[in-house]
Image (cartoon, rainbow, N blue to C red; front, top):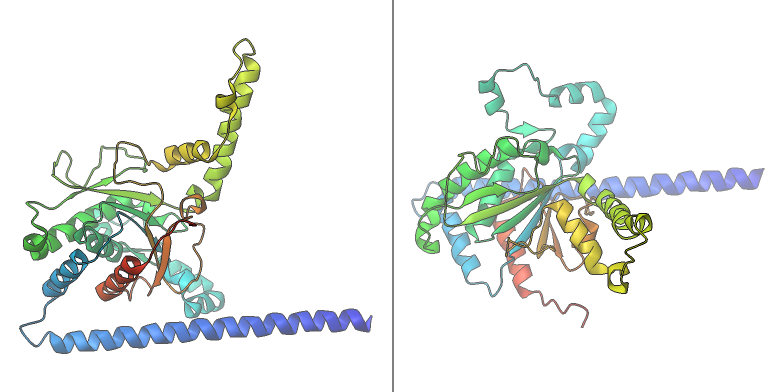
Length: 337
């Protein structure tokens, strides 16, 4: 009896110790990011007093630096972690006052259209900030972007997000047009969302020389899609053959390999062969937040993907973006050789 009580007490002590260490580590990360962000903000406010500095010039310098890199990702993935899930302080407050925090995040569906248009934030994800980050990637000539959030907020509000992205791209275009040598800004096109009105980029029928291909994913597109693909492979290759024994399957048709599963998953995710730039595996995955986890981001498609962590969505800046590109350009991918 005493032995069981001692073991139970030890387990509780170890659990409490690990919990305290985890909370302390997360808090120091948040404090570090908070101080770094405010220091940068103060320095930018001081620099704005001088005519040589402006956000447009900062963006132009970013594009110029990226153009000098030996390699730039052709397929960029961005994982957005809501503040309520990423911040230890937010999680502790949600435990103490769940009703107040929950009520503050609920969108009132009875608001008129004018109020809905200025509602940038939804469940801790600021759509305008996400749009600004996508516009940075577009300025760096990245043709394919995959956006991911665990709860599927971006997928449900992709129309609003697309409008914000197009606005940000148009605003940034005039700052970088001379460096990029482009005639007009790229058009935004979503691929793996349920389109109801032919939405492309907020302006139906608009044509452009360049297209920014955007895919939006959630946790339902990760492991659940692998299970779905296995079931569909079984139905297509074995169940239908048993129903029609007169036409036996060849050995090649019975073969299930990596390419077979890959083709099924690409079909679910909307990656099609006619999009040349849309490789099935992102070259670089940027996770915005201090949660050291991919949070279920398409496990089948990040086998060779470089993964970098950036500050949270509300504190990430273009210099953080550029630092990740520097690291990616220096990385040597040997693919197991």
